[in-house]
Image (tube, rainbow, N blue to C red; front, side, top):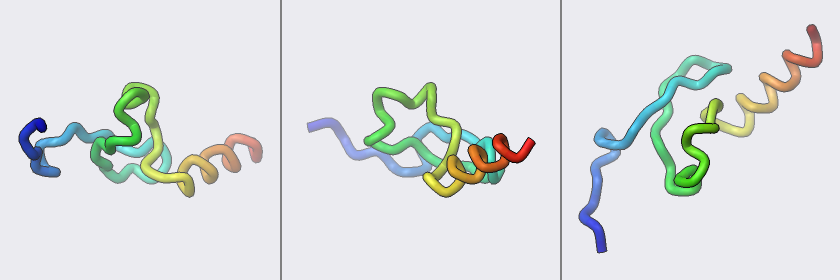
Length: 53
């Protein structure tokens, strides 16, 4: 089993919608380069904003 990592040691990104930092998650392991939003809510708001314009 690999050694434990602290949450502060994980890679981070800035959400394209809300501008807050968010950390890597295990479920994003294969698609980390494609992840742009911190949550489903931010992704939905970005989609909604794109439809308005």
